[in-house]
Length: 106
Image (cartoon, rainbow, N blue to C red; front, side, top):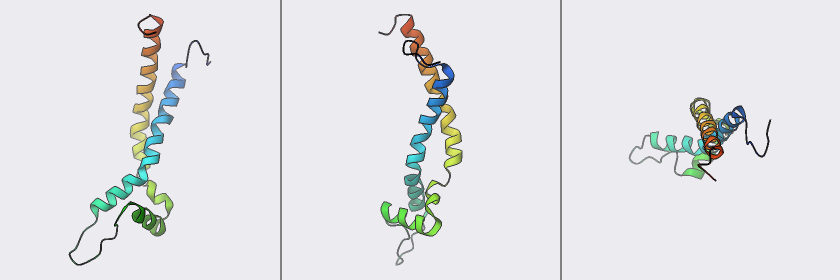
């Protein structure tokens, strides 16, 4: 199915695009959770805030709720991003290989 001269079959581009599209959110989600927690915390004058920085927030969330809490909300995010990335990657590969075959790209 995979040949060097022809490139990837469309379904392979689709699968690889979806998988690669999921890596970004998986890696970035802990920082998004921390950012959201820091933005949503209520600051009361004279009282210390719960989340003071990135490292402290990660440690506190992991300690209080477990490490997996840093990936809260990842499922809907992946369900939104992965299909779009899969389609985009497959379309790009199909169009670019078609244009290369016709001599538009070298």
